[in-house]
Length: 242
Ligand SMILES: [Zn+2]
Image 1: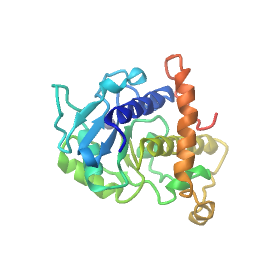
Image 2 (image 1 turned 135 degrees about the vertical axis):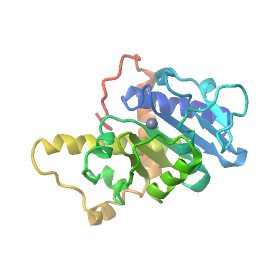
Image 3 (image 1 turned 90 degrees about the horizontal axis):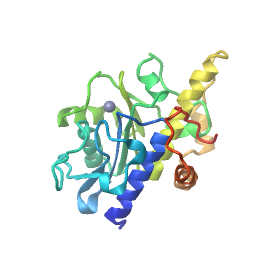
């Protein structure tokens, strides 16, 4: 079993990468759950500097959002994370982000469809949580579960996105892909009608195959970039492979 310290390090790294990519800032949080320890590790709430978080800054709670120690609680939207961690064994890592591009699909009356081969991991669609509200209590967490079903991500209307994965590596990769596809959709739309990757094409590409390997490679790549990051203000870039 991965040690809590290693998970804290990975969670801090994942969050700094999101900050470097302009995908998390004042708002947004990321969590990882270890069922064996019944422990949720989550990034601190609003206003913490996501670009310089360290392992010691992570908040440890139970599945009811109660901190294990200390007085600092989790972010107010902790039920997003605990609802998913509790209900889905494939949602051991959860990112809630207000990314610049994917969030547009929670505003525009247009369904998200993959436009690149990497985007094929979202061939099942990205449903919408229809209430424009923060998810600050367990009932809203349950409603979120209904909206996301067994999908990899959900859009929160007028708010942001939630992406789940088996690992932090997978959640980072999937979030980058979703944001990248959303950005490309917007950019391509300025050129004319946007073509999408059909469910059959997604299937043929086999986006789920070797997802773990691709996620790990992307993780290694972004870790090496983050290690050299000069912490300058975000440019909002979201390109997966710039
Ligand atoms: Zn939010």
